[in-house]
Each structure stands twice: as C-alpha cells, then as structure tokens.
Length: 192
Image 1 (cartoon, helix red, strand yellow):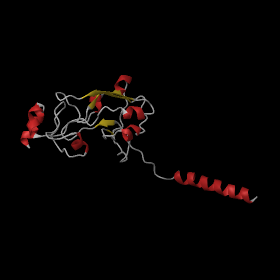
Image 2 (image 1 turned 90 degrees about the vertical axis):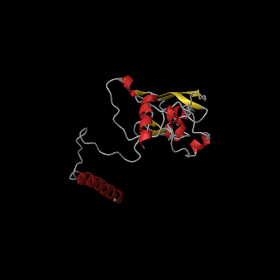
Image 3 (image 1 turned 30 degrees about the vertical axis):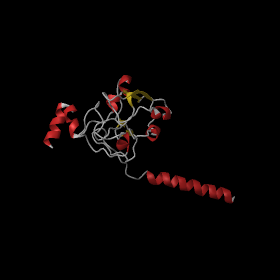
Image 4 (image 1 turned 45 degrees about the horizontal axis):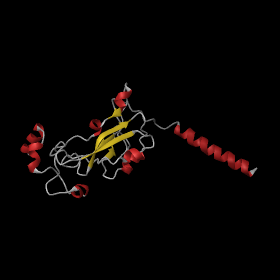
C-alpha cells in the first residue's frame, strides 16, 4: 500500500511539471527573417583554416576522414614543392570534400586534426534543392583571405620552418612576398 501511494505521488509530480509548462510563454522566432544566435560551441558548417600569411593549415594527413563515422570526408594529399607550396609541411590537401548528405556534425573530425586546420562554424543554413550542391569542395570550405594574407602557392616566411608555423610565430606575410600577392591584396598592403 505504501508503494502504491509513493508511486501515485511520483506520478502527480510528473503531471504537475507538464501542467506548469502549459502556462509558460512560448518563444516563437519568425525564422528566416529573425535568426536566433547559436550557442558558442555549436557544430555547423566546416571550415579549412589558414595561417596568417595565407598558407593552408591542412597537411593532407587524412586523419579527419579516418575519424568520420559517417564516411563523409574525402581527402587526397599531395607533396609540396618549393615552386608550389600550399602548406608549411611536406604535404597539403590537394582534394578535400565533405558530403553534407552524410555528415552527422559530431565533431570527431575536428578532434582528430593535428594542426587545427578543420573547425566548425556557426553557419547552419545548408539546405539546398540539388544533392550535388551539398558536396562541398576545398574551395567552398577554405577560409577567406584576410588583409595581409597571400593566396597560395607561395614560399614559406623567410628563415622559418614548419615548426615556426605550428608554434604560431608567423603573424603575417613577409614584405618580400608582396610581389606574389593578388593585385587587390597588394593595394590593401600599400594603403596600410
């Protein structure tokens, strides 16, 4: 009898929680005109990051592809040469694809990346009418060039090694690299 009374009181507590929430104000957002800010650690669209001089952080190691439980990432690495250098390491990601039809936004690829080349943004509007547009290529994923960056391929910062990049000691492009910058980039460097 005591067990039945305890069970009944627990049921009443559960019903009370449901009943009390019926009178709380509902937070309705008029999406897409009004967009709620996402949480700080929200897992949205992926981004391939760059170093401060414009070289890519991705070294083509394919660890992100191995870590992906949905097999949504495809990476082909290639070797850097002194004439064509895309990243400070020996290799770079020549082909990089993420299939958002398969991706479950778990973030395991982010954890696996040894150079923090791959991060997730707060962008969540990825819907499209065509399936082919949901397979993002390297060009779609690369972070945009900021002021002071030079579009790869270009040589590493003078008198530096890949370790200087990994330690965060390279904070911009070298003035001797300005001749290799795109025309619009040269103007912005001259004005500053």
